[in-house]
Amino acid sequence: MSETRNEPSRLSGEAWPPLPLPRDAQGPPGNLAAPVSDDLTRFRGWLTQAIPLAAHLGLVEMQWSEPERATGQLSWHLRLPPNLNDKGTAFGGAMSLEATLCGWSWLTLWLRARGIQRDIVVSQASQQFLAPVSGDYHIICAPDDMAALDEVGERLTAGRRARLSLTQQLWCQVEGQSAPRLCFEARGDYVVLGP
Image 1: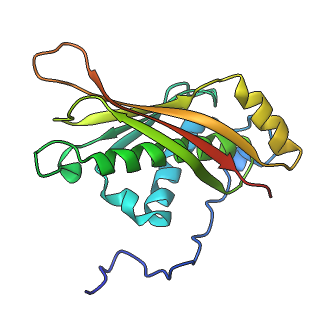
Image 2: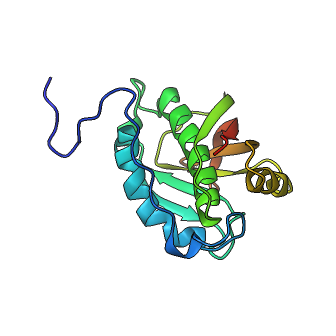
């Protein structure tokens, strides 16, 4: 099997270089220095190189709900065709991957806006498949408890690791209904590793 020309070859175990922090976020770590929304396009370009699978998910757009704050929701708008299963609906594995990656992206963007560059891993995840996804959809990610962000910030400023629980909800417009339907929900515990 030959490699495509636009995908760089990378060996197993070879880390991708981190994306430099936003210029505005290079002050003292921990304080909001740059709006998350200013970093989305750059981050998305880096994401598709650092995690090549991200380029094939049908991701149309990323949005941050509160442009001037870093405690908002991250929304991913996705097309169904790249995620189809044999029944013509969204493949459960694709939805699980997208939810996990959306959570990882939320936390990465939150850290970047504060001038913090650390590795993040998901330590535990669960999901519920509530209804078939039969059209384009969006995933919304936010912390389970916004107040927990203060403790996360304190732990990171002290040079320690921190844990944050995030929820991802997948919404799809269902034919014949006026409002989108919640079709999938996931929760994950994400750990920000020490420096």
